[in-house]
Image (spheres, rainbow, N blue to C red):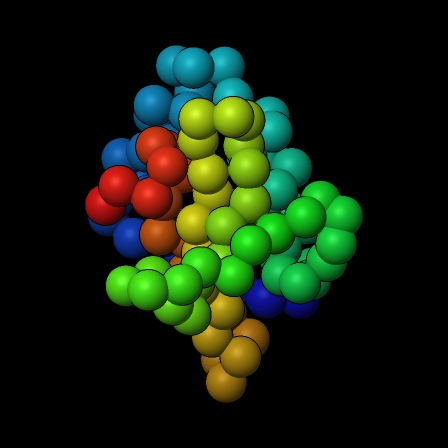
Amino acid sequence: MYKIFYTKKAIKDIEKIKSAKLEKIAKNLINIIKENPYQNPPSYEKLVGDLKGLYSRRINLKHRLVYEVIEEEKAIKIISLWTHYEF
C-alpha cells in the first residue's frame, strides 16, 4: 500500500470536488491508486511534456486526478483534483 500526500493545490481542490458532488468518485480513485497506482481499469494516462512523470485519471469529462508516484518511498503525491491539467 502506498502513502498518500496532497499538494496545497490538491487540498484546495478537495472543497471544489465536494461542492461539485464528485467526492465519492475521487475517493474511489484515490483508494484504487493507494493499492496500486498502475491498476488498469480504470484507465490512466502517463502525461508528457511539462507534466512528464505524472499520471492522470478521469474524475469526469472535465476534471482529472493528477498524481506522481514516488516508488522509493512507496508514496503518491496528489497534484490536482480539479480542471484539466491547469496548475
